[in-house]
Amino acid sequence: MKVLVVDDDVVSRMVLMHLIDSCGKFDIVEAEDGADAWRQLQDGLRPAICFCDLRMPHMSGMELLQHVKSHADLAGVPFVLVTSASDKDTLQEATQAGASGYIVKPFQAEQVRVHLAGFLDQAAGGSCHLAEDTAATLRRLGINAERLLVYLNGFRNQLAAASGDLDALLAAGSQQDARARIDRLHAGCVTLGLEGAAAALKGFAPGRLSNESVQAVLADVMRAVDQQAELVRTSTIGGPAS
Image 1 (cartoon, one colour):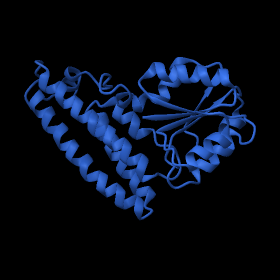
Image 2 (cartoon, rainbow, N blue to C red):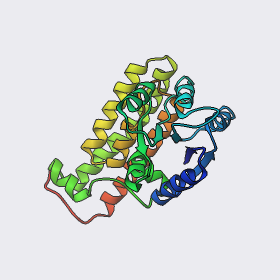
Image 3 (cartoon, rainbow, N blue to C red):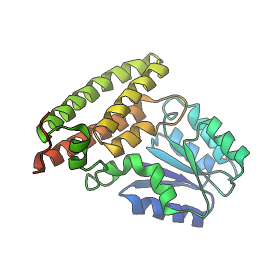
């Protein structure tokens, strides 16, 4: 999974890349300023998320953000601004422009990890599955493992149907209906204890959704459902009968 890091300061760029790499196995692509990043994006680069410095020569982070959000295929990419500024006006402007968040220099590892939370399952190649403990899910729902497997299988079928439905909705320009459908899927993830998948579905930035980014997240959610089902099947813990 590709992560784009944009910063004209080499040291800051290297530090941020190191922190991202420490969170999982990401394919990190770097750009030396906004103009360089925009050239790569125009050439076909499609990152899952972008971390971008706010103040740069040639093209600022805010300018790059505006370009990205006005591009149909890129508008859904989460865009995290990197800044040393903490004034409310700057952060409000970034939010209004479509930024999904920000991190403040000097970087903290947890700041970076929060923005990558929805992608950690994919980055870890399946070795890090972010979900509620299966025993806790069984207790919370008051069901047994067999019933939870039924729920997970049903939710997977719901995701498969949603993939085609969302494709059609986005092709028709029905952004509001698409977001409503994604919200329902998010609720399903929360109910089933799929914490990483829920974060991914909640991670879409304000603005226009792109079908490419939506389908990529749905694929990750399906993978999380499969992993959770496997954990349930291999667990010897049973819950109360439903």
